[in-house]
Amino acid sequence: MAPDLTRRLREEAVVRIIAHVDELTALDQAIGDGDHGFNMKRGFEAITALGDELDALSLGPALQKAGMTLVMKVGGASGPLYGSFLMAMGKAMTGDPLSREDFVGSLAEGVAAVKMRGKSEAGAKTMLDVLVPVLDAVTADDPLAAARQAARDGLEATRNMKATKGRASFLGERSIGHLDPGARSSALLVEVVCDVLEGKV
Amino acid sequence: MRDAAHDAAPVLGEAVVRDPTGLHARPAVKLTKLAKGFEATVEIRTGQNGAWINAKSPNAVMKMKAGYGETISVRAEGIHANSAVAALVGLIERDFDG
Amino acid sequence: MTDCVGIVIVSHSPDVAKGAADMVRQMVGEEVRVAYCGGDPSGGLGTDVAAIQAAIRAVNGPKGVAVLVDLGGAETNSEMAIELMADELLGEVVLCDAPIVEGAVMAATEASGGASLAAVRATAEEFLS
Image (cartoon, rainbow over all chains, first blue to last red; front, side, top):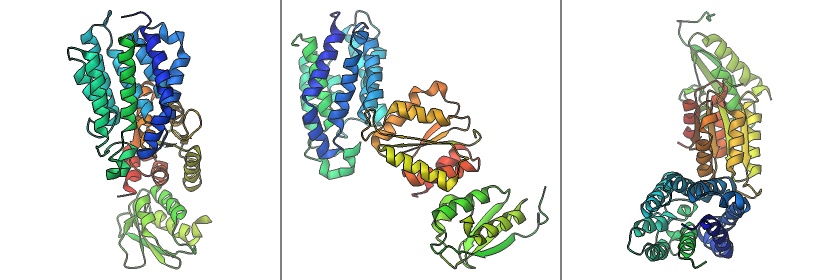
């Protein structure tokens, strides 16, 4: 893996989150409490502020540190959820150089951590509706293309789901017809990772 | 030290609620805390016919909703039964010390 | 007084957290240790893992700590906070499935008599049942 991978992921993630703050806010205002955009922005800006300190680390420790930063800085449920995701992924990422099997294994650990932290599974109109299909997709022949498609489809599938977890579950049937904001931010981050790995950014 | 009434029948007492708003949340907490201090089962009820409830349970006491002018009966059994009844009756009579 | 279970109140709002803690102090008294926190790391509505840890630390004791939370993120952040500070906890720390204000008063009342953490939690959770 490229030596500056940590830096490129860090820089692109914050740019993309900030570019979509309004969209995340609007989605969250529809079925949540409207703070998801700002919470994610605060979390990723805190990661940005780590700068060189983060970039000097290899991917595993860097993900753990970024995850802990999200936990401490986000202020909403997405902090522990994304934080646990990155921390579990980073902890499992021990291979050097990182093999594809290592990566898939660590992604699986991350997804398991989100399930545990959120006491949830796919189908409840949450970020897991993107992450679970993406995890299934990365074993395909063209993992990045498959992951992009799985993220898009997974996100779109949340539109017609009834929320049974998180704040949106208070709305019950009325949550149907809206994309889930957590699934949207997850899809966004999957895109970031694919773009960086493909050298598009 | 044991109260004289140990091993005897339950000790009984009663007092009238003086607060115009009845046995509301704050007095209920006071009564519960006081009752917890005694080595005895301590129960209360409204009037002569209400169901006995555990005076050490804040939930039960708060749900009792004894109103102004109602009589609260106190019943205790155990080592400190006498002191418990005297203390609870005293607290209700003193209008829960303001 | 470390022979009582400690109480922690975690709300999205610092005002709600402080108000609930004030009610506990006035209704139950000073003998039960109560700590509270509210607001996200920027001071808006939300919860802050570091602040939750500081609150738990303030009432950390061998008899344990009962935590009362308001909405979703408060629960998730509290669970995360507890997990990350497992090493420094002197007793068990549990979240109570109870309304924040009523649960805090009930829990503190039970704790004031020296009850166990399990009893304190049960009393708080009994409120709505």
